[in-house]
Every structure is written in C-alpha cells, then in structure tokens.
Length: 430
Image 1 (cartoon, rainbow, N blue to C red):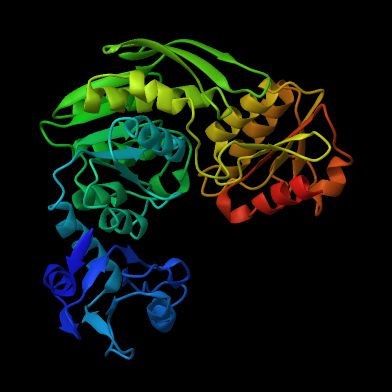
Image 2 (cartoon, rainbow, N blue to C red):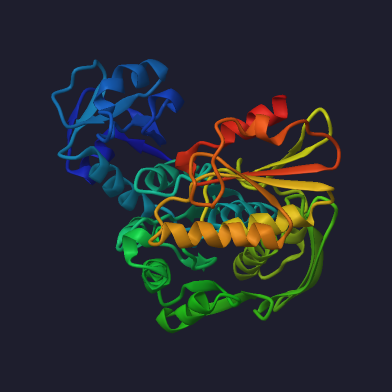
C-alpha cells in the first residue's frame, strides 16, 4: 500500500520532518525491513529506537519516533509508536474496498489462515499475514503491506486476554469472521475455557450487518456464537453447511476429504498431515464459497497448499525416520490432535518429544491429560524442560531417542517459549 509520509503524519497526529516521501508498507523489525518501507520502532523488552539506523540502512524511507529525530531522512514524531501503528492501519483500512477475512481460534488459526488464503488465491489476488503476524504489531503491518491490486485480505487474530481481538477488529474491520475452536489456551489469563470463548466471540460480535461468520459446528462453544452474529452464518464440520462427508488418512496421515456444500460437492487430497487439517480445510472452503460462490477452484488450490512452518511440518531423516515438527505452540487440544496424527502415521515405533504447555489455568491437569492421551495411543513420551508429564525430563532428547530409522516416527511439540524446534532441526540433521 503506497502512502505519503504526510498522510502518515495526518493519520497518526504526528509531526513530519524531512521530505514528503512515498512509503510502501511498514516494518517493526530492522532485520526484515525492505526498501521503501516505514520503520516503526516498538518499545518493549528492547527499544526499537536503537535500530532506526539499521532500518534506514536497510532501505526504510521514513520512520516513526517518540524522540527528536536523530537519523537523517524523513521522520514522523508521535506520542506512542505502537499506538500510532494501529491508528495508521485503521486509517489505511478505510482505503480498502475488498473483503477482509478475520481468523481466530484456540487451535488451527494459522493453518486455517494459510489454507483460506490458498483457497481464495485460486480466483483472487490475496494478501495474508506472514507466519503468525496476528497481534497489535503484526496485524497492522499486514494491512499496510496490502498491495494496491489486492482483491482479498486474510488476517489472523490472536489473543491473550479480553478485549484484544476487539481492538484488532476495530483496526481491520473484517467482513468475514472465522472461529476455528475454543480450547484450553491462554486460560490462565481469562479464567478458564469459558473466558476463552468470550474473548474469541469478540470477532463475530464486531462483524457488520452484511458480514458473515464462519463457525465450527463441531465445537459447541463456537457454534453457540451464532447468537452474537448480526449478519449471516455459515457452519462447517461433520454436521455443518460445509460438511465433511468423509475423511481418510494415508500412510503419512494426510487427509483425503469429501465435501458437501451449498455450492456443490467435491473432494481433495491435502498435502499436509493430520486429521484436524480437514476441519481447517473445511473452513477455507466455506470462506471461498462465501466470497466466490463456488468451490472448484478452492479445492484444486487446497491440494497444493502448504501451511506455515512448525505446524505439522513433516520431514524424513537421512535414515528414513519421520519427524513431525509441530513446535510452534501447544495446548492440551492441539497436543491431542498432533498425537492422533502421529498415531495415524505408518510406523513401528512412535515417540513424542514434548515440552511445556504455557499459560494454562491448571498446568498439572493439562499435562497429565496429554500424557494419558499418549499412553492411550501407544506413544512413548520424552519430556524436555518439565516434569509435569509425570516422567523425568531429559537434557538431550536425541540421545534419549537413540538411533532412528525407517519405521520410526517422532513428534516434536511444545509451547513456543520452550524452543523445541531446535531439536527437530537437529534430528533431521543427525
């Protein structure tokens, strides 16, 4: 999205210093800043103002600041850079006359965002969040990075407490809202799973009268959000408007799905693993039906679609073992889905390398539940960094696994803070 620095100043109430340059997109990380962008220094654990020099050197043509400009070029002085970023994105959103799809949920939101973008991409020019740019920095940067010729915008919305999704919605103003699931994620911050439902409901509560909510019919808390929708509702799932008529898995747990929908029936073989991906694909099909009035192009695109890294990312070691890197995040429900996928992979030995699940209101019970799920599925558990699973944690899971070869399948999963992806990388390099 191309803007003038003077427009940025007007939208944020800031003071422009320097030439009125043209800006194309925004960045809050100097390491990934691209030529032509606006750099937004966020003050958090580190002060982003310390990296303005680096961002300008990388090609930023202007920057926000709360201080007297200390770097040559174009700057916009504002009271709060993070707040200014949201204000700017909210103003930029008024320039977009296109469908905006908001996606949230305790599990599956990033994969659903990815699959939705792929499904819509068969017929439209689509922009979507990179990776999990789903917070008060990532979402506005996504809006500001929308190309001038974009026809649909897909934005993921995360939350860690009440009011956060509502605030993101005031900026993004979604016309279609997808809710994937309500599960025990961030329960520590919202008082349990009913609090999670309240926080996720904020997305559908903000949809306009001519908007559409796309709801998971198989999750009773999500299905109940129908009563909060002013506009239309399309459901998906085993009993939804977009119905999963049949789901079968191949040897790598990749689902083949038969759909029945208001726009016709069809079938697709996904290239990503996990039975739970069928529901994510159904949400994508539902959105495609709402936007385009058909599903054929969406199904063809979904057959080739991939999802963001560290989400059921399946690779093989040189010795032939299957490694599933699902280490981006975890809660008891997403753990169960990943364990189901591991159990469905053809193997003679299945091991889950598991780390801490963060921000649970009852951590002990949550981890015990996952251990019981693993035992029920005949999966061995190697714990890293926590004893909450009821087994002694190890310092070196690769040594604990021993030699791997054909017939072995290993899942690596934990909350993001545990950093278990490094072990998945080492397993593949072993």
